[in-house]
Image (cartoon, rainbow over all chains, first blue to last red):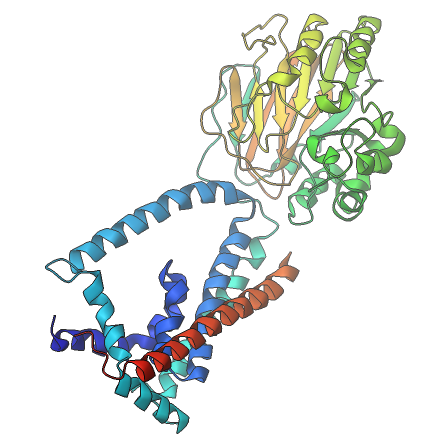
Length: 474
Length: 44
């Protein structure tokens, strides 16, 4: 390779060095090393600092803006971005190979930098630098333009999503059509679900349920809490009430300002996050039990039952490791069977706990560990089970604990992990799944009639997805 | 939620700057050292 071959590369760097230093911060690989040639070429320090700050601020603002815009859809974005970055990297490698074809290999490409550090030139540059002379032809006006432009772009990026914070993001995925006549799922325009569902046509008791609720880094729980203000009835929390760890501070600072307003009519169930802040074993979840006190049952148990109208309701603790595991010999299982037997005169029964026996979600999916709970509930003819854990909404047809459809004696399960913390995706519904939605916060409203029930998913934040229907008890 | 955006942006940018200065200084130091030690260095 001749020295003349390097001239175009040199001219290119002379011409674009500011852009390389500034925008190179956004190019994987290049951003890690671009400062070194800038130093070797003795780019003036003030210019280097300004360009680096502008480029870094723009890149950080881009990431921050994306995170702020996408909020709880970040898992889906991560999945897509992972594939996209692989494609971009592959394209870049192919382009590099194409351009460097014809004999100009990597060592030759490095030569411009080599040449740059030749003795006299570098010493001269150092001397010139000390005299305050500018080494590159580009003037301060161009640097100022790049810096001002990138900072303006950064500011635009960071503030552009501010107005969307309180609104759950909509994805292109639509709700699955209803497959049975008992229920009906729709995407409506105009009138919101909340407006549709504040009317009460009977005096029968109403319960409002959701799990996976409060996080100080999400406004989803504030949005669903607004629904509770309009829908009167008993509030059932389906676990993971306060993120991240269910500590007393999490409940005080994250749950109490939103759903905590309705604490007096709340009948909670604990989730795994409610246990993660305390010591393992019976008696943990101190934040949860300390916050709800008597409403949560005994701290060593976390399960209890009560009646609403003609219905019998059971709040169970599906954190099996915390309650002697969900086996037939455990205290909870023995209590459950005895409780169901003692209330066998109730025609309608509803149970709720955090972990779903069945879910199409890809984050956790179906939880085999709670099958013994289902066995006992199915044997006693329980009508409805409500769960959370998967941060989405899903309704199942009546089925037995093994997932076989059973319209006569089966349990209808609702997963309502839509309390506001985040969304988890559903790609392919599993057997007996009738309706699902993975991008709408909201609550499930159940009206408990003496011989049956009506359900309606009420979306928050102006969402349009809803699901409604009715069924009779066994 | 917006309360964390500006501090995060500032801290992240300062972090970038710090790392960049270190590498920039390395580049300058390296070029000077090479120039002094190998005054006739040529890659051509």
